[in-house]
Length: 316
Ligand code: ADP
Image 1 (cartoon, rainbow, N blue to C red):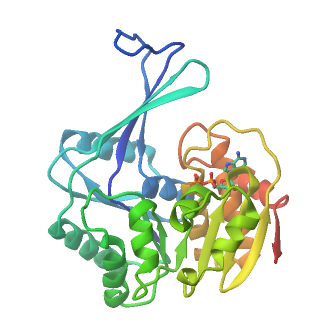
Image 2: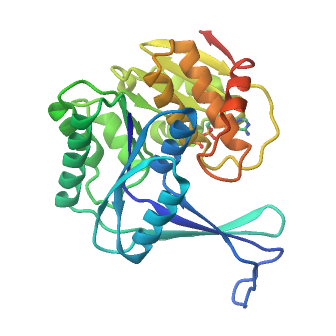
Image 3: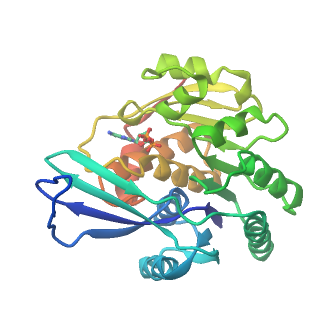
């Protein structure tokens, strides 16, 4: 089984309109509504790959109830979300004027130490009931504790009865704190070019620049580091061997969630004991397949398997 942790899920509302004018009444057709959150998206990709997936994290209030109902309707995963006070957030996107989009994203319920402790205990409890092959901690958390993620990883490493790979996909200050905290290392991280660039304080647009960053000592000890670069594929550091992953050009619909699908695909590949090259190919192919769908985390397994035939992984 794969457990994903989504600290701050969202009800994603997307309006499609020809024009959008500030300070005026804008009328639109009914929006599409999806449940978002990086851990949930990763869970979708892993479940659609064939894994047994349990979603954990936090939901709150009436919007939390809606989140639960919509997730149940997907019939993809076991849902074990904890209740928290406050309302699960909305994330509103207005797609307008042929290609522009405007977003309004709420901050979501504040999390305190008790919430975190209850969540971690639930994860431990689930892992005692069934063998768990990966735990994915993905996305932001509305917590003022910059060291929240290193603390969560440490707690899990100290208290899990067996060793379980911990995959982490976070960004910004929380990623920086995790990488600078030498006392604890996740097993996997997947910064995209912007996240990696923010961390090293440079703009990263090429594989050469990303590869240079992966040599930094803060990545020592992390078994699987994937620096993803959208349509360029990725460069990776796996057990201190560096890889270039080249992907073919494809038609795309929306790349939102491609990184999350990559994480979910990697968790599935770990569960299947794929070798390194197969793991990277499968994870990348999930990101590609997601880019061919409007919905975040959605993949088509047949397409994923077909894409893996055209992905090239070379040690560099
Ligand atoms: P994130 O969503 O975290 O920003 P990326 O945009 O780097 O992550 O996407 C993750 C992976 O998804 C890429 O490494 C690639 O395999 C796939 N992907 C993303 N964008 C595209 C694209 N335009 N064409 C083909 N594959 C893509």
